[in-house]
Image 1: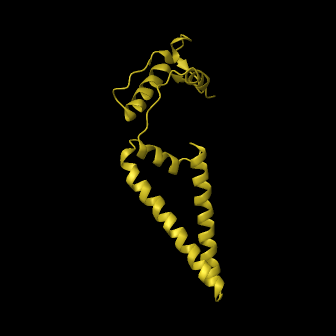
Image 2: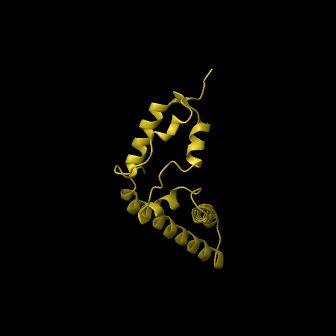
Length: 141
């Protein structure tokens, strides 16, 4: 049976390496993780308690990192969730316009399908271009 515990020393090493990906010079109290319980192993509950107490340092993000995070992780903010919804609606609209334009429609509707497809393509190009520009500033992307 798995105990779902991790050695404190291993957790501290991994945490230090993770923080180093953002800023190797960042200082924080690494000994605070697992020292209060005087245990050799810690569980997720121990880690969560330490995080809630504010023992992890706040990592400042640059503008490209914020943009990339917003575009990649819809759980990071309300703006990210809105962007995620708009992008998914654009995907559905683009697929729908391609399917409907393949049918024999003439006149007004055929022109609207083309406009919808072009708008979706512009949005997708914007999305991929911004991600390509911002990913170089994200050390863990």
